[in-house]
Image 1 (spheres, one colour):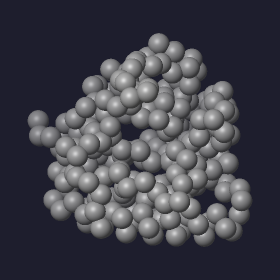
Image 2 (cartoon, helix red, strand yellow; image 1 turned 120 degrees about the horizontal axis):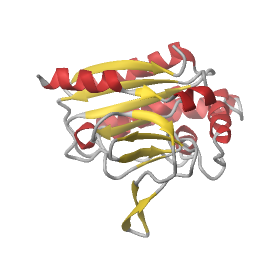
Image 3 (tube, rainbow, N blue to C red; image 1 turned 120 degrees about the vertical axis):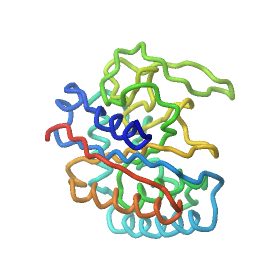
Image 4 (spheres, helix red, strand yellow; image 1 turned 90 degrees about the vertical axis):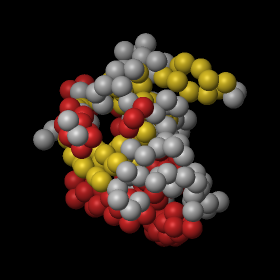
Length: 238
């Protein structure tokens, strides 16, 4: 089996649990698998993408104080018991940093952060080679391991029961839908194969989700010569 076949099989098995589908029937995820990437520190190209995203976001925020895409995610967080002012959806956390400047992290993270801010949707990326087994979006029992850092030390934490989590066979990969990623699967300067997850609710729409995915894919192929991509949209309700 080739790597392309292996990644396609892995992508085909990704699913949204019925417990999440019942919570937000309008939810869909666009999952993009990318191989043959060229990782490394932020550079002029990714800095430019983030600068453009900052300009776009500032204009959107100036037009209205209550962006519907962000309001949608606050409501989704409240539906599973999270307090969105304390545990913010990832897109809102980024938007709150636009005035002072978005973080410049690395050549892969910068791309999906720019797409997140430009299209007003949560987006994440992780090292595909660090995954163990099947990717799924589900609600937590509360005993799933989540490796994170506290006070500079690596610790194993756990989600709250009922919390919406992305996970694989080894544990939680992202808590509270798109709030905080684990350390195990995080993108590093050594990441050459990655999975990107873009989250969409009703205010964004399927077309908006697809458009954000097209932009992400375009930046990946342009800035990572030789990269190969496959994608799949997974919906709570087909």
